[in-house]
Image 1 (cartoon, rainbow, N blue to C red):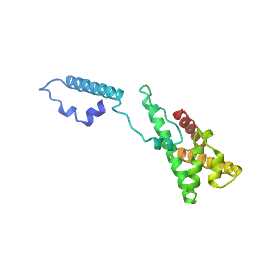
Image 2: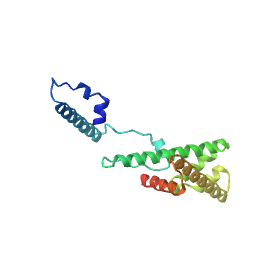
Image 3: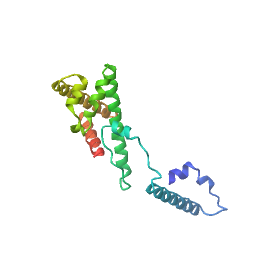
Image 4: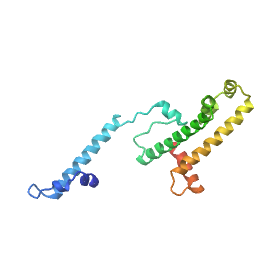
Length: 179
């Protein structure tokens, strides 16, 4: 409230001839409370809902459950932070495969990065790529290793002192934010 009052020069609008500063502040505070209440009611009706692309969310490799009104702003922030780190990691991994001329291979292998990859058909993927099942498992292992490396790098870039213990701590927070 006070940062908004200072930004809007509320104190400069105070005039002793019109009343006390205390009354001005009280009225401004009451209006702020009322406006916040209106925003909350609007949010209950879906007025402040951010509509995100389902494709964008699925590209992150996780399923996103709806964020309830009981979710704290900190939890929402951490969730979006975690999703952005995953998106950056996915983009970097895709750029790596594209740089090697293996973009079609990446498109076939990418679903196996998902937590629900148990539903993916490895035989069909191996057939699509024209390789054996054993070769597919090796490529998936390499893909996941590279993904872990890029994920650690993305997390490292968010830290001021990127020691191994700090990176591990951030990775645990990332997993917790997505749970």
